[in-house]
Each structure stands twice: as structure tokens, then as C-alpha cells.
Amino acid sequence: MASIEEKERLQKFMAGAGVASRRHSEEMIAGGRVRVNGQTVREPGFKVGGADRVEVDGLAVARRREFDYLMLHKPVGVISSARDDRGRRTVLQLLGREFGGCRLYPVGRLDFDTSGLILLTNDGAMTYKLTHPRFGVEKTYLVWTPGRVAAGQLRRLADGVRLEDGMTAPARARLVSQTEDVSLLEITIREGRNRQVRRMLEAVGLETRRLKRIAFGPLTLERGLAQGGYRLLRGGEITALRRVTEGRAR
Ligand code: URA
Image (tube, rainbow, N blue to C red; front, side, top):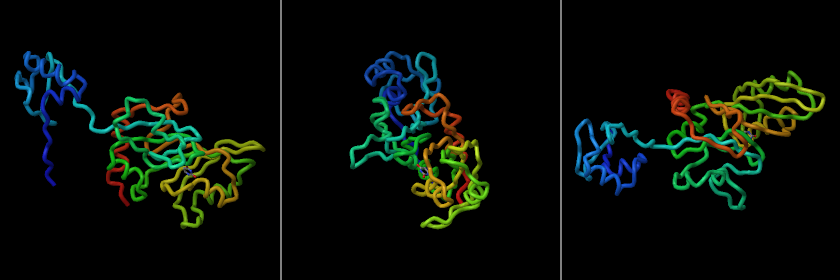
């Protein structure tokens, strides 16, 4: 389908890109400081689109990104939906005021009692692809469980276990470490059913003492990102997320 490009007034484009307020941008335009595709433009209503190169005082102005993408380290005790009827703290309430008008939403869910990596974006198409089981995006979790884990239990987790909503798809499960008291497992799944990892462990006779997501698709929870902390994704990370969903529908 052909797309009709939306053009916008030059001063609005400049304000959106953070050059100056609209009013000040108009003054800059009138003062002959702004060029579009190499030509000085003095008309404030001049319309620019995606293909136009805008320069102010000879420096190129970067177009504002269409969408925002953040990684957040969710602490236990915070819910990952946008709102909560019971008044519990949400991941959106962890964000600073700079994201107030951005209409960000969490990409998928983590339980109230799960910590770790959650993505937030206002890119609905990307959210759909990252969360729909058709695209099979991998999510990796660390699970702390009391006592020792048998090889057969790991194998069953990897092969698939029967839950009340059906068999789980093949997964990866490995033992990271264990003592008499506690074992640490790493498990990677491609589905995202409600409380799936906890229910999988329960199905093989294991208790989940603590659950933390450490990777989502190609992204890993950044070391040093404190609980409750967040940061914008870098360009390469956004590209990697796009790649993981391209041509992957099953
Ligand atoms: N599996 C769970 O059981 N809980 C989560 O929060 C995520 C995956």
C-alpha cells in the first residue's frame, strides 16, 4: 500500500527536534538561518517531510524519533500493567516526568513478584510482534528453587510439560549452580502464558522462590541498571528488536 507522507511546518519540525520553541524557530527562519535541501527558506509555513534535509546555521537537524523504547529493571512489588484497580504501584509510575506525555506501555507482563527486564514503548506494532506467540520471541529467566534439581526435572522442563492450558513448547533449561539449600536455573521460553515459568516448575515438582527475567529477545538486562532504573534503548538495540520479529511469524 502506498503511504502518504505527512509533511509538517518547518517551525513545528524544528521545535519537535528540540532546536528551539516554535516562536524562536520562526525568528530563526525569518532571519535566514535555516536551509532546506540546501536552499535558504524564510517562509515559516514551509512544509517539510521525511526526505528533506533541514539545516540550522549550517548544521543538520536530526528528525525526532517517531517512537520511544525503554528498558526498565522492574523490582518485585510493582505491577507491569499501565493501571491497577487496587492502587498498586505500576512500572509507568517509576518513570520520570520527561516521559509523562509519551503514552508508553509495557511490552508483555511480569508478575507482581517477578523482577527483571521489561520493555516499554509507544510502538504498538512492535509490541504486538514482540508479544504474540506467532513470533516466538525468546525470554530468559533465572529461577531460584529450594533444594536440588534432578536431571530428569530439567529434561521435562526443556521437552515440555502439561499445564492446564496445554503442553508447553520446547524450552531451554540449564542448571547454573546448586547447593543443598538452593538451586539456580536458567530457562528460556518462546511463549508468554500467564505465570508460565512458575507453573512449569510446579508441574515438575519444583517451587519458585525467586524469578527474574534477564533477557528479552536480543536484549539483556544491563548490568548496573538498578532496580527501578531505566534507560532509552540505543539505535542498534531497536534495530536488533525489529530484526528478531522480521519474517519470523510462524
Ligand atoms: N513466568 C512467570 O511465571 N512469571 C513471570 O512474571 C514471567 C514468566
